[in-house]
Image 1: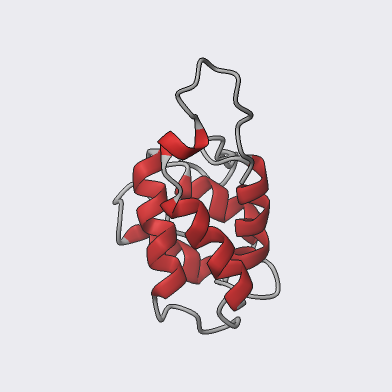
Image 2 (image 1 turned 180 degrees about the vertical axis):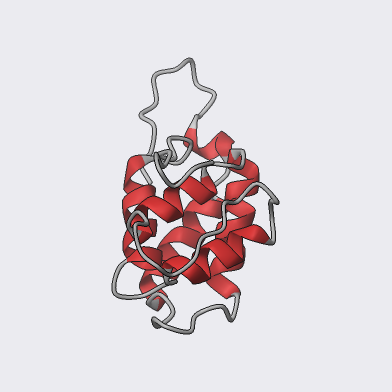
Length: 125
């Protein structure tokens, strides 16, 4: 991972990515420094940085950090972010946002892709 060219996390559906961006890198969530420290608990490959500037946006840091993990790991980390006492500079995400993401995390694949010959519509997030 490099903050010079952050990766976009494409494993998560766009609507969920957008909600996560608002929750964790908007008016609520984690500062860039807090985000890097948080994700460093899960992987030694998370790039560290100092506070002298030149860093990408909090949104880019969030997507780049989480892109280091497969989808199952991402869901586990995001679930932890919803329940963890990790918010200092910014407030924790709103309850409605947390509920929305918790529902996505717990959504089961068989419900999303019914076994009826492929004629069912796939539910959105």
